[in-house]
Each structure stands twice: as structure tokens, then as C-alpha cells.
Image (cartoon, rainbow, N blue to C red):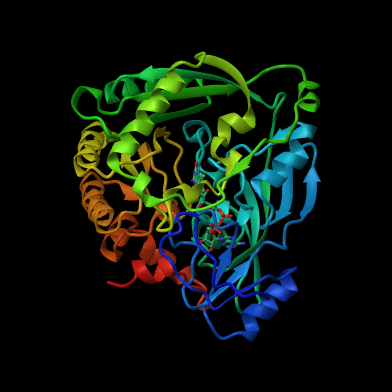
Length: 443
Ligand SMILES: Cc1cc2nc3c(=O)[nH]c(=O)nc-3n(C[C@H](O)[C@H](O)[C@H](O)COP(=O)(O)OP(=O)(O)OC[C@H]3O[C@@H](n4cnc5c(N)ncnc54)[C@H](O)[C@@H]3O)c2cc1C
């Protein structure tokens, strides 16, 4: 047991204080803590969610940190059973040298399997493989009354579909079975293409999605009219080489750390414009086709520990929406214009087309269409007003906002974005809650 007043989310907003965080080492201890305390609990993974989905202000967190063991692995099928505190990084470290890799990875390898399931995360290959839950074969869920439910697509499937993307509210995931994929090389053959505007994105993305497993674009949101949406499109496939390449490549990733909060004075529209200018210049001077280590391709931000401190003490507001395919062109034009006009700049803006593989979780975020993710320095009211404006636009175009990256969505908006919420409610564990949950139910 440990004092947990300083637990925060990756965006470091909102700032909250917890009562306590428990660190059970096994299912019995987890069950004991849940049953012997009469307060609200929220499971805690690695805290890499940006908003308040991993916060439980004034109440308890129950961490998976010490439940991080591999339980079994089938070398024929690639099915790994592991505890929920195992991270994507742990899996890569242990299984890549044997030729196995998680089929879906997010932009950081430091997330836990519990967190990946609870937010039903997605990667750069959504158009091929869908959400993370597609590689989840089975899971075990502990409820606060001590009952353990093992569920999959056939057995207790209603609990399974509520728990994937269930935002930690249906109970504590003890372990899960993840189907890994075979790889012959740890490297990615990556290409980058300069885009002059959003029209280039639509064109390049459509072609790339057919021939490349990984596609994503970085765009500059500080430019209007004919330069709106300019940026770099990245696409890549796994390198196809002999297996011994796996053993030769180092799994270690060089990293540096941001030791303190950066002064907020550096976070204005002009400096963000300059950063975007510099980034575009730097990236367009790279060789356009490179064979690079998986770390540089999937997890470039992981090489800078605590990079969130670059946003100063007040933190950052991540914002991610998805717009359905049928409305994506019109909606993206309006959204990008609104952002640019607001003069609230974003350092890292990512655009990607999601494919047609349907989300299975009752509250899973992805849908076929285009997703846009931005990170705004938290400048207080200006950025909050902008987000409210953007939520209205997203609603009008039939899209939704990603809870893993949200700190501002209203209850009205959430319940319109996620009409399955009323069905989901019956699966919520009575002792589980979160700051996010309380916000999106305060109508
Ligand atoms: C740099 C960066 C890049 C990212 N890129 C992507 C991306 O490309 N795609 C994407 O989808 N997301 C992305 N994310 C978001 C991240 O993948 C998710 O927020 C993920 O859920 C974080 O996992 P975590 O282990 O840190 O969990 P936490 O943030 O601690 O918790 C997340 C949720 O999972 C629940 N939870 C955790 N453990 C359990 C458990 N054992 N049982 C039940 N519930 C549990 C929590 O209650 C909470 O609701 C990114 C985040 C960062 C910081």
C-alpha cells in the first residue's frame, strides 16, 4: 500500500488527489483489498492515458504493477497468457528474439495489457487488423464481490464485449490471452512522403492503405487555405529477411529524459508554428525510404522520457476524434480551419484512416473513417472553449471523441457519441468508478 496523492495522467490535466493506491501481488490480495474497503476503486495500469480515464479523485486506485508475469505461451499458435500488468515493452523484450510480436501496438510501448484492453487501443495498422481487442482471445475479470469471470467471444461474451473498451469500470482484469504474430525481422521498411495539403493526404492514404500495413500522417495545423493539412505521410511494412536478423538487432532503445517542467512562455502559437516549420524541413530532408528499427518507427516518443514535461506545469490537452468515412472530407476541412483560426497550436498532430473492421467493445472508440489527434498546451479557457467547439462539430458529423485522450467532453456529448452507454451501464461493478465516469454521467 502506498500514498497515491501524486498519481497523474500522461497529460497532467486535470490535477487530482487520490486517497490511496493499492499494489496487490496476486488475485487473492486484489480481491481482499476490494472486499475489505468500502470506497470506490479504479484499476490503474501505467498511467499513459492522457485525460482522467485513469484517475479516481478522492478515492482509490488499484494498480496492476506487481501483477506482471507471463503465465504460459504456446509456440505453435502464438497465444500468450499474461497478467494484466505486463507491458507491450515486456512482451517485445521477451518474445521478439523468438520471432513473435504484438499484432497491434500504440504510439508508446509502455502501456499495460490491462490498459490496452480497457481502452481497446488502436495502432497504425488499424485498416488491416482493427483494434487491440482483435488479438485478445480470452480474459479473466475479478469483480469487487470476489467473483472471477473468465470470458471470451463464446463464453460470457456479454462481459467480454463490455470489458474491452470498458474503461476499467467492469472490474479488475487479472490476466488475458493475447495472440502474437510471427515476424522475421525487427525492422520496418518505412517511406515518408511530403504532403502539400489535406487533398494530398486523401490521395496518398487511399493508395497506401492497400499496399502498406502501417500508415499515418503528421500534419501542421498552423497553416490555412492551400497549405492546410500539409505534412508528412509515413507508410511501412515489416522487413522480410532471414530469421537470424532478429538475434543480431539490439532491443535496447537509447533514451534521454526531460528533467523539469519547461517554462510556459515557450508554448505560444508562434513557437508552435516554428516547431512545425522545422519538423517539416527536417523530415522532408530525410531519405524517403529507410529500413529502421521497430522502436524508431512505432515508438519515437519513448526515446524521450517524461516528454510531457515539455508542456509546462499545467500539462497538455490531448484531443482525438474519429469522423465517419462518409463525412470525413467536409468535417476535416471545418475542424482544421477551426483549429487554425483559434490560434491554439498543436505540436504533434496525427491523421490516420481507420479501416472497416468493426469495433467489438460496447464503448470502443474506432469506427471506419478518419481519426485526428492533437496535443494542445493547456492554456486554460482558450483551449477548453476550442475543444467544446470541436465537440459540436464532431457530433454534427456523426463522429466521436476518444475517452483515453479526453479530459473535457461533457456528459451530453459522451452519451450522444456512445449510444451503447445505457447498455454498458449494467456491467459496471458497483464499487468501481473514475473521475472520467463521474464527469460523463453528470447530466
Ligand atoms: C505517447 C503515447 C502514445 C499513445 N498512442 C496511442 C495510440 O497510438 N493508440 C491508442 O489507442 N492509444 C494511444 N495512447 C493511449 C494509451 O495507449 C492508452 O491510454 C492506454 O490505455 C494506456 O494504458 P495504461 O497501461 O497506461 O493504462 P492507464 O492509463 O493506467 O489506464 C487506462 C484505463 O485502463 C484501465 N485499466 C488499467 N489496468 C486495468 C486492469 N488490470 N483491469 C481493468 N482495467 C484496467 C484503467 O482503469 C483506465 O480506465 C498513447 C499514449 C501515449 C502516452
